[in-house]
Image (cartoon, rainbow, N blue to C red):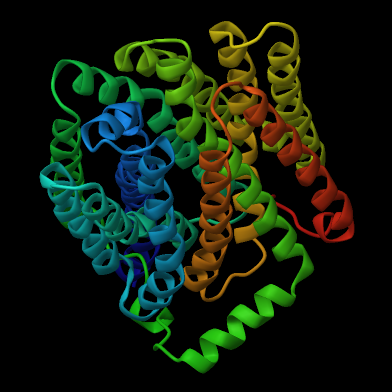
Length: 428
């Protein structure tokens, strides 16, 4: 009997440490898996922006090569963004049905093939068509990066992760123009697309090997167009969601326009080389990266409303600096760079903030809802790039007016939807 009692007492004592160790191991494994996922997403997230920014220093050379106008060459940008705008909803719907990984790999494969095609393009219409197809592939990158993050994280943790992804996305305007400008000046604009093809192929291989499927089978939604229409209709009737998605679209458009207008202001208007412009864009992009990197900590220290208004104020200051310099100084590299740096600093904060708020409204059909958010984003970018391509690039004033209008629009939408904003929390 004594042995039996001893056995009963000692067994729990032996099992408790083992159970604790098991839980600890599982927690460490879970944390390690989360870090690996975030690591891969940090490479996936900026790819669509890299494909946008890496060749923008080459736009004047492409125009010269094909004997085309600046406006026509800028349509390669508009076509690319239009492709992204059209793909995100079907891609989100398919990702909800078959999982995230296969859709992402298909997009990366399409980006690789079209990059090779752009490198070999014999005329500008062919390049515009290829850039549209490339946009279809690129649209899956940011969409699926955010969707995978939403599969694994919620609340303040999601905003924090989106801040990291926003910092990675913001690193594209930092690094890509400098790299693209260097390649274009000392090599060829075609070589830029060869490098892009190698990059997307490498990330695709990493996704295939490292990234797990984050959407479990029991959470998948079969493709049902009627149900999808109902989900989209519900989202579009939700005033808070529409407000946040609209704000995100305005922020994304404000971030993009510098890459469209900048090469012509610096290279054509001021006579800078493409590599010099690339280093200017490096400095401006660094401000954007800084804003995105600090968003996660800022969102824990203040309210989202105050942070949004503060960011919009800094964005307006950047626009006013450009307008004032255009009026009193003229075309000035220092004024353009300073105003753009202020604007991009604020955009770095506003981008993950507004996207996190929009993604936090719904917890089901995340892929489809994220696709709708991305649609707001890419439609705004398409309209903005078309507008900036139409406006003259002889002054920084159009860019300043755009930044100022975007800031006013952000505050107006936020104020109109104040009661919806107050109901949404990004707390964990």
